[in-house]
Length: 483
Ligand code: GLC
Image 1 (cartoon, protein in one colour):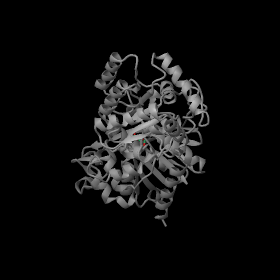
Image 2 (cartoon, helix red, strand yellow):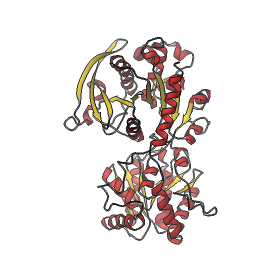
Image 3 (cartoon, protein in one colour):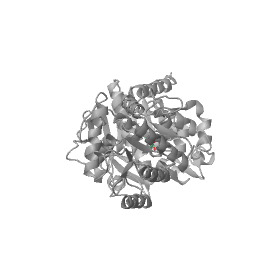
Image 4 (cartoon, protein in one colour):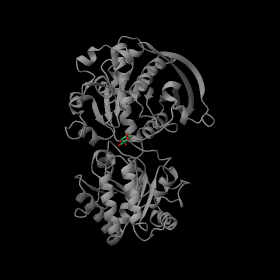
């Protein structure tokens, strides 16, 4: 199959969150299974290392958006068997700052979406599946369905939209339909792409993609409920026969405690009970923490989605009850200050790193006993899976992908033969503290159970194999509609 991934970010070239990981590791799995994968993404020039990444210029074409005409240069490289096509345009993508967050993000990704369509026209072979991600790619299925339905080549392409984060709708004005996409305004007037009295590119994707997915089965359910859908339930219920949740996997090569050169001491599932500890000992000594106390870690963007108030309550509670706490992340200024303040009050039990460092993140996964992730909502989540891989037991709020990927220890049911973490349901501080208490009790008073859970965690299978097959089945299914 020829699969085109249109994505606003993809490792190893760009990433702000889980989408960058998923676009890359899923594509790699498709290649392993014998498919051709083209990843198309913008070239964020200020962040791109031209020396290190050998890219070849292939062609240049104009992208017309009514009165605007902007040029797209297409650069190419092959990496891990994946064909990367970068859309280069200095006006839109050569900027200081992050990947997103500019006043004209809507226009930037309108340009990107139009450029993807132009690129497809230039390719010397046919694309079977165009898989788009989040609001940035949402308009592509809409353009294909409305402007190219009868085209011999483009009309045959089948589209899949994956929702990684339902919070971001991709808002644009009604007029932008014609102005940026050459689409008729009646698509807005009849409600097809209207959301909150604006155009939403995410909604356009939901309406026009052949299939819609999100990144876990539980989140797929949540997205059809009033409470859990960030407003999308109505549109997703209408498309429920074409909507499915497929749990993300993770990159087992990138995160491997038996080969990881960032961590202090390598270990594997066989020697984890003795050798993992060495990491905590060194980490604790380096940062003035007590190595005999359990270490709870957080590696996260510090945004409300991640349950910041619960993280803070859990940190206070565990420090007061014989634990140590480490956090690495950046985001909301007030939260960063809160953690700095926590450190000022408990310097011997706290490690705070505001910012991001891959190296320290890996060290934290390897050194910690527990990994805290009490998200308010979490379509899938990657941290809990990496934690498993490093034998750090996740403490999660059972929502979205956290519910689907962590088997929570239940003291009454004695499920220590299968459990690989701890969890609670309700979003409140009492429930979160209860969960910390159970983790501490297991660590201090039931060492055998604790060790079993660590073992289970390290054995958990979060590879892409099965989930990639589910995507491929879905692709086959939509392609069969062609016949
Ligand atoms: C988004 C979601 C996260 C998910 C990731 C990759 O960042 O918030 O839950 O794991 O996308 O799908």
